[in-house]
Length: 339
Image 1 (cartoon, rainbow, N blue to C red):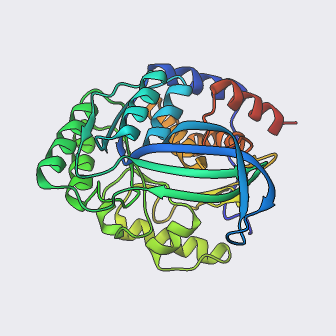
Image 2: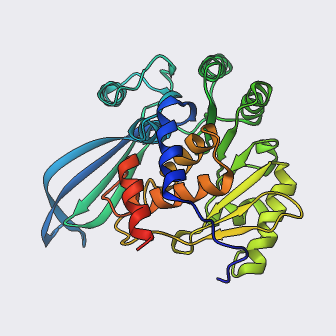
């Protein structure tokens, strides 16, 4: 894909300065939360009951998932985070709270809804190959009383935040009223609100956000344009900005890096990927939006924030499963990219 703009340059001094400011920033995160469970083992034979492999389990690993992984990333990067989401009243909720406490994340902004089950995504991995994923979740809309509690919870977190992240997974937690209410309060406080959109959600729900961070597939759905080359990428970016009236847009493009759009008349910029080896892409978007939020809250320009987040994503995809990235790893990736 032809580059639509000039690559961003960032000196080592500037990078270290931005990263050092992460420790002073607090991000309020809103979105569905849950657990990522990795069941790992080996396959030695096929089941006699059906043509499927039998996985002999060797280990199980639980990690914070969905929006909770975003909060986990913020903590790993040195920042502070509050996480607002809904859990059920079940065994998975107890495991989730244990994981939160282990990661030094407060549980005070969580809302319990006994009508929903706590989200659990189980990935069965044989050697290095994922053979199955099983999702346990509730996706019905929140009852009015629960919705009000969630809204008051995120507003409480936003009171002292330097930025707000909205993670839309289209699982019933968010609606247009809640998203617009959060954007309104963030704009009133003059802090950035970043949205990771969902392809099933109308673009109008995100109207007025500071920054949207769709991947290629989500951008195509939001714009109604299939992205196949530089021109269609430019058209999609322009369409999304017009539909959402957002200040800016970063479209993540996997192996092609990411494209930055800053409004009509401003030439988009394409940042190439910094991934050295892609092992697992799950969680890369969480890392991107975490670094973007911390960087913007630290006073970085959007191009600088995107450059940093692209470096971080390159580190994250080289790890197994959903993972976090540290400032030191970002610095090392920067130095490697400079040769």
